[in-house]
Length: 101
Image 1: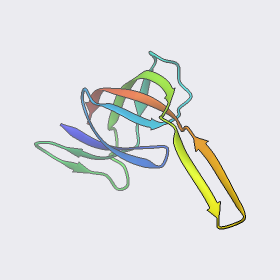
Image 2: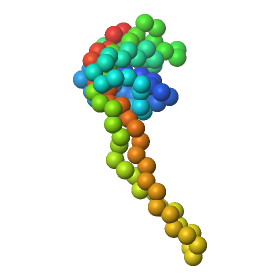
Image 3: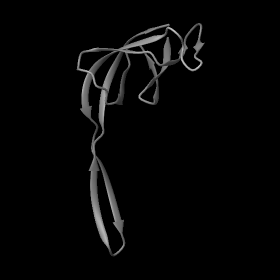
């Protein structure tokens, strides 16, 4: 069984045992999180939400809070200036422990 869940404005296709990197959430490492914005449940009897499936919950465990690898951004204007900038996005890794329709 799998499901489509909305987390912080982004949609993710998840199944039990998956590890998903999402935008930073305020949760401690090792804590349990319940995601109730389930848009779709697939499997033998699929359920489509309007906009969410009522009563469906995806449970997850916070595995880590970290920052992604650095992205280098170069700006250049011919004959004027050069600028080098870097960015590292904060993320939370969630391990999906269960999907309950």
